[in-house]
Amino acid sequence: MIKRLNTRQRRTLDYLVAEKSASVQVILEAAQKHEEVARITINRDLKQLMEAGLVRREGKARAVRYALTEGYSLIRPLDLEEYYRDGPDDRDIRTRFNFNIFESLAGTTLFDELMAAKLQALHNQYQQHIKQLPPGILAREFERVTIELSWKSSVIEGNTYSLLETETLLKEGIEAAGKKKEEAYMLLNHKEALQLIMTQPHEFETLTLSKLETIHCILVQRLGVTRNLRKTLVGITGTNYKPLDNQFQIKEALEQMCGLINSLSSPHAKALLAMLLISYIQPFEDGNKRTSRIIGNALLLAHDSFPLPLRSIDENEYKQALLVFYEQANLYHFRRLFLEQAEFSVANYFRVKN
Image (cartoon, rainbow, N blue to C red; front, side, top):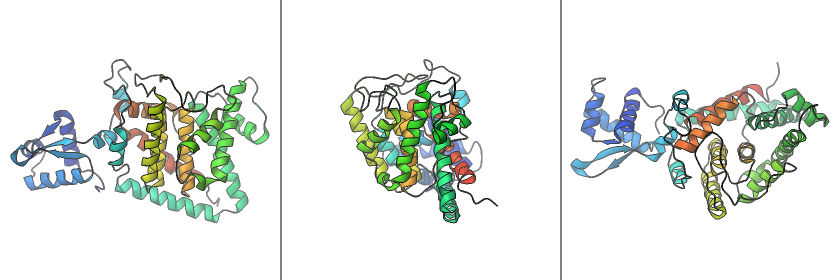
């Protein structure tokens, strides 16, 4: 596993983005425009890039060429500002659901060695923090996570409750004046779903379709949303990407997703993929992103890791990162947001106050 790509390796990847494929000699000549480098060094770079699942070799003998893998498109850096300069009708996107995404994700290192080490360090810090907290304080911290995640997850969906209004509703049952009843239901549904995953965390060590549907049913109760897998096409605001419209294919995609997530050892990789893929598949009529965020947290808590209340996340950036995944199969920015929220969580929750 590559700890971090060096400048030369990044240039090679950029070159292959532009040229699609190239021989060692052509890659060497392109590299030599920037620095003195030997062929053996380029061969070593290409070997490391192949081992990382970013580059593949095509052909035999003198006809050997190197090209990018599908896995590289997943983690390739993208400039969001530049990407969204064009509207949805002008962007070159993948408009249809891609079943190959599961194979690509399975063969890709979702977190490089440095990222994985950082997440493990954060996990260890969280474990140390909760061991030092008295039961009463620990319970209040989980209550705070419930309030703040319920609030932020609902805000992402357009809910207008403030954080203080959310706290009053969830702790005292008092609805905010001038707000729609459905907004209160949305928040209360989040509370119920979070209480389930916090009181029975190890029920979610393995993800199944029935567990996914259970969380969705809680999140959409009293909101006029049809339960169970949808049978028709849904549109997504701001993109021409169209999810599956066949219930049997939706079920197949969810089963593949559960199999992929359950095959992983890292709780953080599990949570990342759940938050991305449930949104990408869009299995329900509504409430997909809400379900993805709760399931992501369920997987983290099931493996005794830190929750992600997402309190500091920018809603617009979150939505843009999801759309880039829908349209380009690129998780670079969503992964970045995940890492930032992991750091925020461990720094701001379950801490012993001095």
